Image 1 (tube, rainbow, N blue to C red):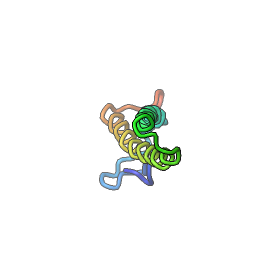
Image 2: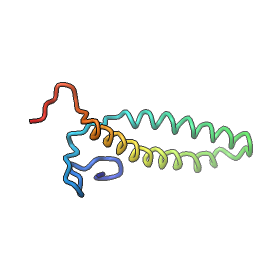
Image 3: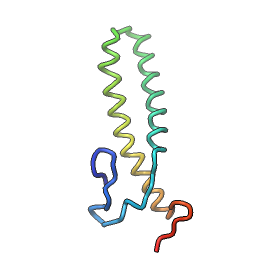
Length: 98
């Protein structure tokens, strides 16, 4: 389904479904970034209050963890949104398939 980390392939390798006609946009990215960002900030604040580690520990811990969580969650959320579009036969307004 994916051709890279988060980019959809043009066609599904298993069923040959044309994935280029689906447009999931940037909605999942913005929503996921806000949710995961809030979660990471809360966890970082908890760690700071509980242990008070040096700043470099926060950088080494939270930056990679945030990037991994966003990229992993983005694959899942984009696939879920594509599935919902497919099941509901959703499309862009005014677009007609021949």
